[in-house]
Length: 179
Image (cartoon, rainbow, N blue to C red; front, side):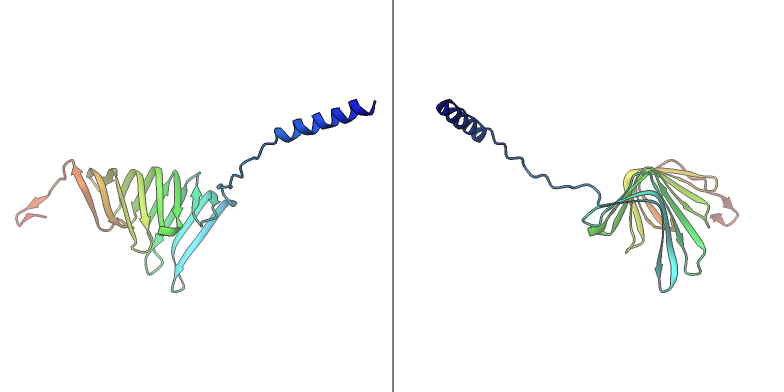
């Protein structure tokens, strides 16, 4: 009776040793934090320059942030007056480059000039205060609509260049020539 029990134990040990699996360790790359209903004010020299609002923010280990439910930003001039707004359906902040990317329905409004930019992807660099894209753009001005591919502009849309413009612009003439 002792021999079959010993033989059974040896067979059991031998079969258990041969079937061990080593599972590969997978590093977690998802967000470290999740925040809801976020409102942030950015300031320079004790004055608010930018306000940002988002319904949902994911923050990653490398400092990048994702805004899967969109973002709304407001930009203020030196006197605290609202200059322009930016809205996007989805946004991402790339910390290493200090650059923002908006995707989906992206809209920038210049309040003073009553102009609006629409595109499907737009980048913003806070350090240079520039916005740019290589995508198709539409700019609605008072009475005119400009179209093109690619844009390089100041963040408030006070000065911009459409890289490949299309469409026409109405030029008003008086006795002194074009204006």
